[in-house]
Amino acid sequence: MEGTLVSTLVDPFNRKINYLRISVTDHCNYHCLYCRDKEHRTYTARNEVLSFEEITRIVQLFSELGISKVRLTGGEPLLRKDITKLVSSLNKIKGINDIPLSTNGHLLAPSAEKLKKSGINRVNISIDSLDAETFKKVTRGGDIVKVIRGIDAAIKAGIGPIKINMVVMKGINDKEIEPMIDFAFNRNIDVRFIETMPIGIAGIDVVDNCFSEEEILKRIHKHLPNQLTTIRPHHTDGPAKSFLIKNSKSRVGTISAVSNNFCASCNRIRLTAKGRLILCLGHKDSISLRDLIRSEMSDDEIKELIINAINKKPERHEFNKEIYNIDNAQMVEIGG
Image 1 (tube, rainbow, N blue to C red):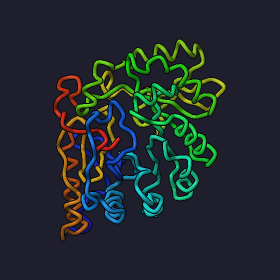
Image 2: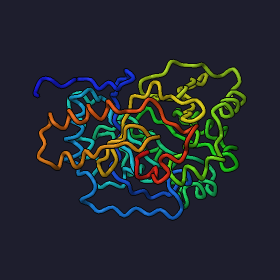
Image 3: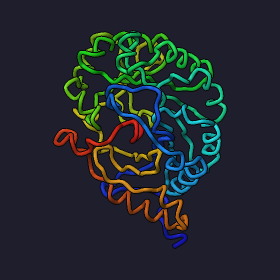
C-alpha cells in the first residue's frame, strides 16, 4: 500500500479538506447557554481521552494527507495540563503551518506568553457580553474581568490576529453588538458575530433566540456608517464575512451557519477529545480514530480508513430542515 495513498484529502463534492479542529478536552470551566444544557456534567475517564502522543501521531498522519491547519479547542483547552507541550510537538510536524487556539479566555492571562513561545500563532476568544451580570448569566458563572485580562495578555504577548467571537442571542445580549465593536476597535483586534446553531439540547433551547446575520449586519452598518470596506476572505477567516473598519486594524465580521450556510466551501473536520472524527456538525456519522491508533493497524492502513471516511462527508448540514438530528450531542463534547 505504501506510495499509493493520496496526499490531498478531497471529499465527494470536490472540497479540499485541509483544516482539522482538535478538542483536547471535553471539560470546561464555563457552562454557556448555547453549548451545554444546565444539568450536563462531564464524566470522562483519563484513558478515554486521547493522549498527547496519540494526538501527535494522528496529526502526523493527517499532515501526510494534506492537512496544514490544526486548531486546538475544547471544552476549554487551557484546562488540559501542559498543553504547551502538545503545541510544541505539533509545531514540529512538517506541513503543519498554522496552529491557532480557541478559548473562553478565563485562563489565558497566565498562559499567553508560554502559548506564544510554544507555537500558538493566533487565538479566538469567546466573549458574549461585556456586562458582568449578562456575562455571568450566559456562561452560568463566568468572570468577565478575567477574560478581558486574558485578551490584554494575549495582545501583550504578541499573539495575533486575535479574534473575539460573540454568539448573538435575541433578548439576552443583542444590545451589545455596538459595545463589542467598540471594544475590539479600541484594542485593534477583530470581532465576529455568530448565529446560534441548533446543536444538542442547549443549542435547540436557544433556537428562538436566534439573531439572524441580516439583523446583525444592519446593526453593524448603522453603527459604522461609511466606515466599512468589504475585504476578500483571508485563509484565517474561515466562513466569516469580513469588513475592515476605517482608520483601524480591526475587522468586523459575521458567521451564519443557519441563515446563510457556508457548506459549499467547508474545508474542515473535527476530532473529539475521545478520538471521534466528526465529518459534519449537522450529522451523526463519525469514526473512532482512538480505536484505530490503539490497535495494531499500520499508519498506511489508518490513512486509508481516513480517506474512506472523507469520502462519506455529507454535502451540507440540515439545520433548516431538521434540528433534532443530533439532539443528544453537547457542543462541549463535540468541540467548539
